[in-house]
Image (cartoon, rainbow, N blue to C red; front, side, top):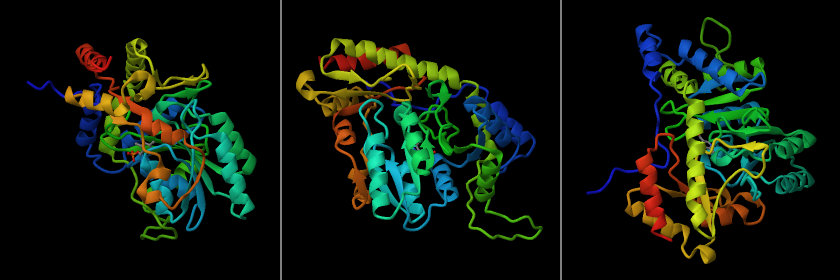
Length: 377
Ligand SMILES: *Cc1c(COP(=O)(O)O)cnc(C)c1O
């Protein structure tokens, strides 16, 4: 008999979510505004701190899109973007008719390489075209070298957008990811560290910027009794039902991070027996990852098996795993875009695997995972 599937990262409800959803029904706040939206925003502001103002939206993707709109990115502009990421980081650049310019990762955090970033900026300037924005990602929950990246953004006066979709709760030098840039974005999609089924948020540096984001997210209505518009608007505001799930999830966020970090320790122990397998971990004590997904890199020569072999073994035992993100500069849809870097992201894609990391995995799930992986020894 086939055992039940072990997922990479599945929704994990805390228990109080339905109470907030019920309140929305009881008070007939079935709309993309209401007490849950306001409450969820307050919860997030208190959580990420640094005097952030948060606008809850329909998705992380729409948050990136609004950040680009507010950064003034328009047709023909260049936007620098980490290549090693999920396509949602880059797609909104195309929505604006702008050109993504992809930049490689460094080896310590797997995120945006400050050296290639500066090279890309200098190349743009020398052609008379300074990039309009930088999108840096905290991939798999690992904080990027955000000090260095932010210093470059400041030096060249370029808007910095931090994609913290996978990094809610991660910190660099004690400061929450998503609060370093001009804009930060969060995601509450089904597989993220907390989920509202679908949803996202834009982390802003002040109230004025947040108000502008909410204005654009609600069809950009001018102050007038009739419907009047002077700008193009969007329908990107979060629903009060969805926000109710978010309020419940906030109550278990830190516990979920604890579980995910514990899964990471589980893999560190498990792979001690193996040669040629590296568990991706924080490069220094300044970095604190939520370990959204635990990842490993396999040196085929030393390990005696490939990332593909490991994945197929797990699949046979009904356990989900996945290759690391395929870099954007290697994606057919972005094949004509500029790229600055070497082959760091490319090598990670070839050798890496994401392993089951959910906060709801049980001891018996761990035993099954360990048993399956050890078949490769
Ligand atoms: C999930 C994700 C997004 C997009 O968030 P959605 O809420 O799914 O639109 C953006 N960037 C990264 C790195 C992600 O993992």
